[in-house]
Length: 80
Image (cartoon, rainbow, N blue to C red; front, side, top):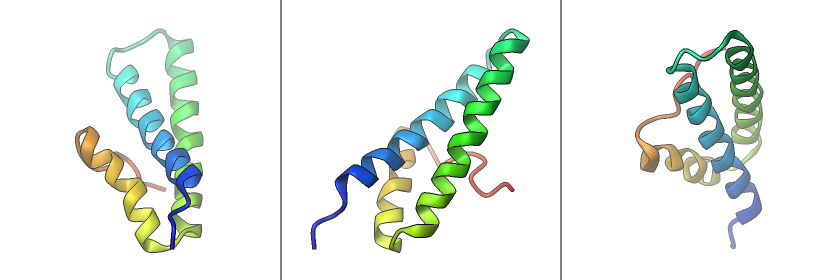
């Protein structure tokens, strides 16, 4: 069975966006940037959760493995 590559690519993009928003927030941006970064992070965490919940475990694992290559588990993924 071939893997749904567009879904994996979209999931990995969500992982990168979450991690990049975390990195930007670490630089103590202006309040407007911080607000937008938190919004983007929350939006893509929600999207990633829904993707992972709807996909077979092996595809979800491949998406979340992108984070391991970038430097660790997806931060905040287990948070509500």
